[in-house]
Image (cartoon, rainbow, N blue to C red; front, side, top):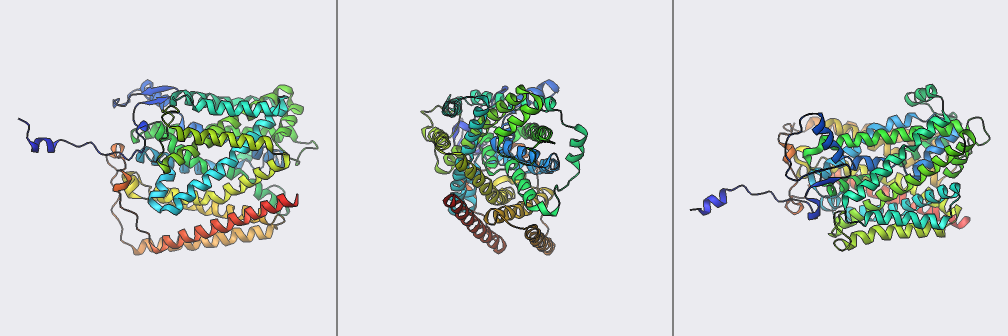
Amino acid sequence: MTTNATLNSKPQKPRSAVLDDAHVGDIKGALGTIKLDDDAPRQGLSARLKTLLAIVGPGLIVMVGDNDAGAFSTYGQAGQNYGTQLLWTLLMLVPVLYVNQEMVLRLGAVTGVGHARLILERFGKFWGAFSVIDLFLLNALTLVTEFIGVTLAAGYLGLPKVASVVLAAAIIIASAFTGSFQRFERVAVTLCIGSLLLVPIYFMVHPKTSQMAHDFVVPQMPGGAGELAAVMLVIISIVGTTVAPWQLFFQQSYVIDKRITPRFMRYEKADLWIGIAIVIIGAAAMMGFTAAAFAGTDGFGQFSDAGAVAKGIEDKAGHLAGVLFAIALLDASIIGAFAVSLSTAYAIGDVFGIKHSLHRGVKGAKGFYAVYAGLVAVAATITLLSNGYTQGLITQFVQVLAGVLLPSATVFLLLLCNDKAVLGPWVNGPKTNAFTAAVVGVLVTLSLILTAAVVWPDISSDAILRIMAGCGVAGVLVAGYSFLSGRRGTKEDPIDRTGRENWRMPPLETLEKPVMSTTRKLGMGALRVYLLVAMVMVIVKIVQTALNH
């Protein structure tokens, strides 16, 4: 006979924090499937490779999606105007890319809750609303730049502008509307493979490999002090196009939608490294072959847009090379549009409790698909209605807005990854915190320089150096304060990380709200004021520029 005591002694299944039940089940990737009840140890190379192939997707797509139309413009500008002298910035960004994206994939796998929802629940309605509103605005404008890339590629290939934009929008929408996560990911991974078209272009143009190897590892500032302002803007553009706020929101939600749990963390980190390798190879190839194509020509130092880069490549290496570049640009614009649209739809679904998963058909997640399709349609329409000058203005605004918002996005990421209620045994270690804090300091400095350069286009090199020096002094003071505070405090016991593969965040409503220290309140207040002032100044400047034109 079964007693109440026996019933009560049975282990209870822990409640899940996952907000959409479609996020629980088999992992159905583009290159393989892992059953929900498949908990067998992965022994042998074959078993591990099959698991990796099934997991590959989130890291690959978020990284390759970052080499989008804006990246083609930025890397093309760096190569055409400065040769390969800024290649070192790509090597510098590798650890930044990995640390940032590793933190969000950890948040996704452990919590099962999207980035915007975590900010809302742990930091309040203001920051939750701010994160969604600014993401929506920034992503909508970024989508416009993706369609601008479509028009540039179509123009070079001799295709009609309207038909090209409409067809691209239809492909972007239709690929997500299949109601199958696996089918969508297969399309996305195919496009990621298409980005490797940049490699044969590199060999067709054949830049000097020895010079590229040197410039990749030896930092230098082309043009001397007199051109510091212009060079700094290009460097900031490279940082902004390589590390973008939408990436944080996208990868966390995509990891959740793919149903990846902490058990597969090692494989997802490998997926991320594959994506980083491909994005750095593509970026370096673009800088290299653009530099070689324009070296010694009248076009050197006269960058206009990616369409002109395709023409320069054709003049150097033939029509086929130019066509391949235009196809690669088209491919990059579409994969970028996929990722940017999904990051917005996921975030809005997370915050407003709308069913949000590519595993659901349109009828099962109408709001999610409406946001996705609506964003794509509006961006395509704006592109078709705008002229060349307006498109340039939008591209500039996107670049600046991303630079302004990136430090705040990284700050919230760092705070969430130190929240023990959220990540438990998966919280950051001291080395990750120290590195990320340093990255935040650099991003704040670059953000201030970028904002100042947009508001005051004639900013001098001395002014830029003063901003850098001021931020450096502030960083040293903050680091010193943190160090001394840590020494005065009581040392906590090391975090017990045993059994963390099976640890998941409890439901959000069961977590205690974090206690805001005075230091954190002051820091959050300063961040709020900075964001408000910087965004107002940038918007005023953009409006003035438009009216004067």
